Length: 307
Image (cartoon, rainbow, N blue to C red):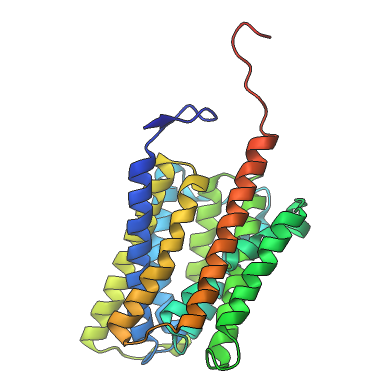
């Protein structure tokens, strides 16, 4: 257990890491259930019911902090609307990719998003990126190309959808950083929940088809795991800084590979596995470099009596 010098809070890094890994495991199971459902039902219908669970959880957290009307009072409402819309559109593309792309390969491609965040932070946040991180980002993209090489993944719409999903999610992350300069976390969560709820329902209702009882139970499980996963994530981030637990999100890759083999009988091929390892390595390098940069630019604390 450590004391955070910046916030004065007590951090419990060990428990935060355990919760992060467990969160990744929960979301991996959720992806398996979603992949099973999108083989029979529209990705828009599956996304709608999947988002209902998240939206209810998000709004529950918001209402614990402030009235909804107060939470929706934003200094940058247009950015909040764009941000909330981006997330649900990203989930649509991810759900469409689930139809054809194996879980392991899909998760590997999705993990390029931290690299894309580095690039999009330049025009949107005005951040400066050195040669070191640019090289790491380039190497990560090489890893993605290894996975989708000729003779690798079938070059269908699913591969394109997975890349669009990763791109949209990275822009969502960058805009989230942007709005955090103006609005509270409760305001951002309120817009995320409401925009996703409205858009997913407005589109998903046109793709609705009756569900078998067994499939309906899968939907209920998805909603429960969505709330559980986001709840565990909140607890993990309350125990340790995001920069500390973020690297453990890469556990999602071996977990997805294992689940893909166990449930769908698909093993990732050795060359794609190398590509996935390149992406993870590049992402970890970028994270480490960003953390070093924050330490280097952080103000040095003044000891009492030395002013």
